[in-house]
Length: 318
Ligand SMILES: [Zn+2]
Image 1 (tube, rainbow, N blue to C red):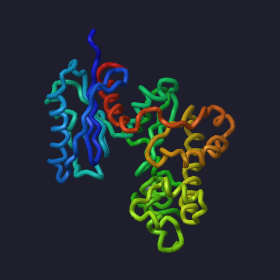
Image 2: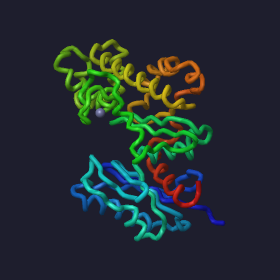
Image 3: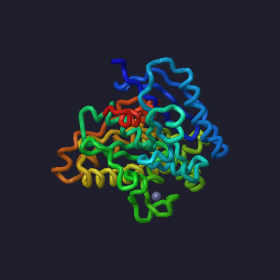
Image 4: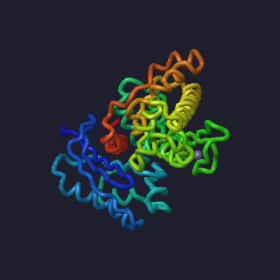
């Protein structure tokens, strides 16, 4: 029997990555396209065109299915892209049906976080554990919850909105309308926004010297060097993330927490919450937590691998 090949399409707000992936998680070839998104029609054309160009050039075995990982809200049952905050998709698009009609093979859709979690399940920590949390902190905060080897979706596919867990009753105002959500305190975007707001009150902070190039890695380094503003921003992030993770571990009893995302990539924030998360939960629960570890999947590829996983599930291979 010839090898099975699946097409993954990782759709972000600025780029589209299309690739052909083996059942083993090996990427045979991939190509990056620019996401043009001035209007709804242009956005959809960008996706269809990227797939068309890739498939025209593909000369390997016939793909079994196509998986598409998207930003925004998805109904995976009907293959509908419901809406996206960062793209001009404000009403539902029956994307899976459109792509299936064009290429004549099964098509699956889901959001990018679920897709990345599926990649962990198939080719990452899921090869040795059925019960884990996937935590991603970059511009925002997201989490995928896997229990009994299944992604926890909730009733309408929205489970895992960790960024809006309330961790401070009088905290920062979140775009969702509540105060004290996790995301504005621990995400890269949230920390940078807090620094920008607070800098005028800290004329001596070394964070002034970075200007627009400031990153969370520099905030953490400045905190280590004793900068009071960087210390406050970092300590709030440590306290809030620790609280959220202890709550999650107590609630869900995972075996592993696996993490990715730009804000966690230097390990600083995780190293500072590790002790709290490993000692904070109830005794019997913390004893079954084996560790908090970085994802072994390449961060540049996890979106594409995740999209291919969606295809793997719908293409008859688990
Ligand atoms: Zn919120």
